[in-house]
Image 1 (cartoon, one colour):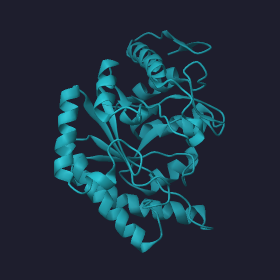
Image 2 (tube, rainbow, N blue to C red):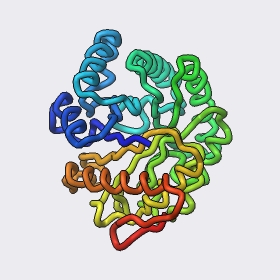
Image 3 (spheres, one colour):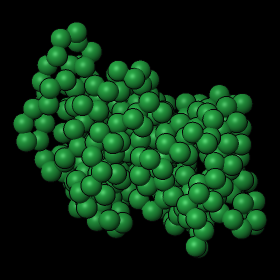
Length: 296
């Protein structure tokens, strides 16, 4: 299991400097964030010339020595604009065109997979209606990505129409071929226990790690309450074959700009490496974690 880091962890640095920093931190791969209105590399810019921008990004990755772990596409600053399940026909058309452009870029970059957001509830519609429309929109996206050798996953998040493990499971059951980018912090924030999230690991294509606690979407390593030692053990047991991405962010949303992301990334890097090594041994061991040890 290789370690990755998100390029959107340090939005105040240039993109080239971020990639250099990730490599300097001795991480093997990068999650490339293509977010409307806020990332280093923005969809509204690169869509003007997918071929040229793909060449630019391939060159940056090659120069940094990083593998591409994930291609994470969010079309806008809000969750509604061009959401996969937006009921407005004009929005559906825009979302479809944007998806195909981003899928082309992901292919040109050799991305192993692509992460999307699952959608939200619109107006007073029922949850069942919302998630059914998400499933319908995601199914053809899964199929189109598969034709190009790319695995497609969604990240269940606060504010989405699948904000609990039970709802996520329904979406996965409704959508053959859909996988997950699992981030425990969106569930931990709500007070949902790790063990309730754990079954989602069987459907994981990609994984995000950062500190999290109840009512705190992002915390320091020391304040983290998620048992990542157990998570890594379970990932081994279910045959997870993806990257373990350390995904600190720095933005106003939910006060996720209160941490020093270099130090926190290093702490989780060392923790994860020790846990991954221990999980590969025949006999159980113990790893250091905030507040004590975790048997694995």
